[in-house]
Length: 177
Length: 250
Image (tube, rainbow over all chains, first blue to last red; front, side):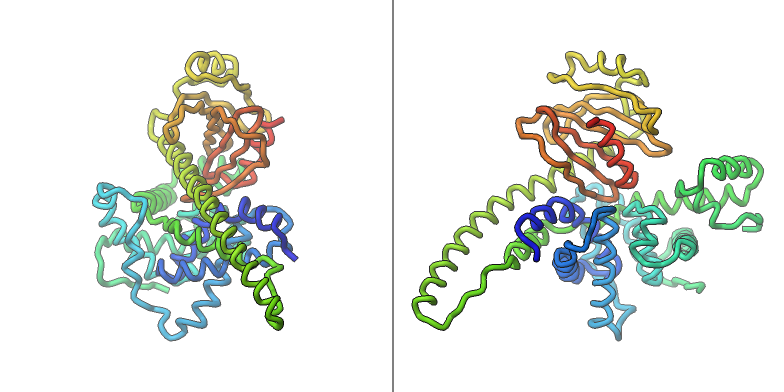
């Protein structure tokens, strides 16, 4: 049974990775609102599993739980509409200054669209690598896919992003899968 | 790509995942392969655009608070029997007390967690600032003594400066920085292709076990030792930061 000491330890070691957890959830679910709900759920789950965590890479351990919670949630709530419109809220970043929003706004919108059109499995790999800075080994651990598959997903995702950026246009997005 | 190298080699090189020898081989190959050159340029343009667009989604402060409250409410030992009226009364009194205590604890915790989020933001911002061209060091030297002497008179505390080149962390130099309004010393180390900033400032708090965290893809580890607080930050893997932390505390 978990006690107050475990809780303190959890707050000290796991909770600081909340941003990483939320970022991954927001990109898997394409919605900040849903990400809040799922991240909260995942954190509580992580706390219940905390007893079985014997050290190692906390962030990878937590992200693995977050990812599983996301996919369970998607299956339950959105089986029908996996190609949902993305949540406009995803564009609002609380810590950005007005200037940086204006400058980065256009690029951000184009990239968000490009990322949204990637199949979820490719998207999570690119988010873990490029936004979260995870190594191939960590990505393989988090997503439970072999390193070879991590590498091939990453290169296909990058190719698609590159061609979407090169086109520089919204509208037609070809998925050459 | 018409080059007969596997695409995965280019990506692994780009991601710093090739071993030293294979990376050197690839570098050699690169000098006369325009296909791989183009592929590398494409990769870095994608990475650049992603960085520039600031796509990282940070968690709202309200979520952090909700999770803390959840953690505090699922602790065992709050089940009561509601069968007897005197018990009910006791339960009500107990509940009142719990609510009162919880309220006080939460308002205390809230301060602390806001502090921690702010702290992480300040540290990571300072690290990012230092990565801008020409900002990383004020004193450029691999010699601990030179760096140590440079700091004299610039900060009001003393700390050891060491080079861990033999253990894979080469001293690059140091600078004086300001993090959240506090003057701090920063030592810079390099390990393979990653830069590490170690921020040092004076604290009144007691020594404690290290705290770690991540923000926007950067990892940090914070610890206190002998009236000084240290915080190392980098984009490298947490295990590398742990290693540097151990070297610094030895």
